[in-house]
Image (tube, rainbow, N blue to C red):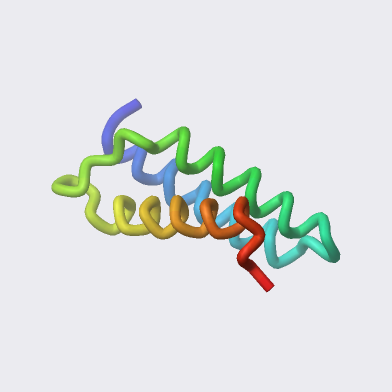
Length: 75
């Protein structure tokens, strides 16, 4: 995959997470969000902050959100 297509794939994944989380209802929403954040973190863990700073920042936020959700600190 080229760098450009990988970047498009990343942002499509982020958009999918946003859309599916918005569409989810009830207690299942938390599980869906956690599953998708975990997938995003694993799939793009090698993101280079020099070449893709915006994606790198999103991944750091995603990792933090995953830790919070897993520890049940979300009210």
